[in-house]
Length: 202
Image (tube, rainbow, N blue to C red; front, side, top):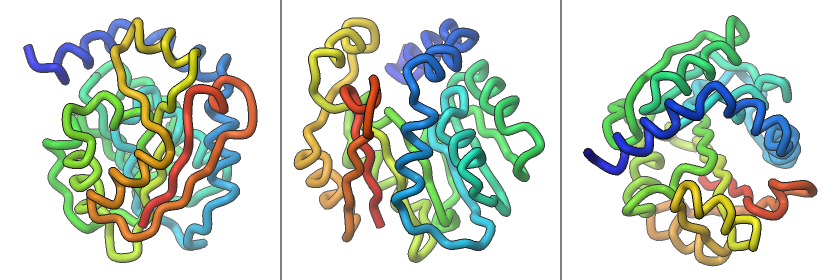
């Protein structure tokens, strides 16, 4: 079984409880705080939430007030994808893809890509980031949330065996993937401020 298949099966088993966990830890408000600091076009956007999980990042974007001409949700876990679709509901024109980033084919079409806590599970983070960059339309924006070192992250590691990246290291990975401009956005409080860090890359 591939690492992706193994991980997606674990997320399938966790799907029914995942959104409650995200709500309890405050990730939705953390993502909305980040969105409030990023300059995005005012027009309706064509967007992708890559490995959306239960849709927390996409839901935060909708709650923040972003408008989407099209919103694609991608996740290899079918159960997570079903929860994400329910979260978005009828708030945006929606397409769902039960696959992983490497198998998603659209190129140079997204104004905005959301990607929360994905690259730390990838064997080659630079290759994954380069694939995401190839999906961005000219002038498009990638918004990332990535695990950072903290003793709280050790608790997550014991369950999910993920990696953590210092902000300087993450900026270096983004540069190697071909992004020209990267800005960091620390989360202000709670669990997200301890275990995660936000990035905007163009």
